[in-house]
Length: 164
Image (cartoon, rainbow, N blue to C red; front, side):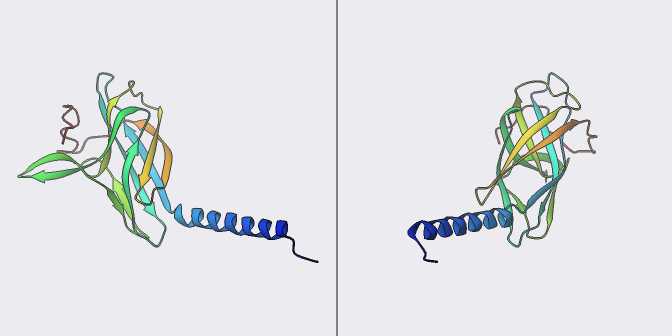
């Protein structure tokens, strides 16, 4: 059997496809559990999303951006204690260590949904896309749920002061 240029091209394309598929499998190491969006009164223009991020890969990852069709603006946030007062602050990224997890929860790291495009109803599912530092994206559906506020947690979320 002689090897023709067409056969060589097919082998090369098959190898390229296998290589790209392997990279995709290895790179898709971010998993999400317990995603949820806070149910808020219909007059509220902001809400927050919480979840647990799992990095099954061997390299650290970071969420560097997020977006959702449910809000005009989606930002990465944290709560910090400033002289005994919990304040919400925008952060440039949310790190997820290799082989580890990062929790986004009330009173800590979370996603802010700002300028909601429609009221959120308990039981709705909200689409959220996470953008990673390696340019990958992960899109998920998060149910809208009633989430209890912990003492001192989530302060600043209802006053529309998000120009950090």
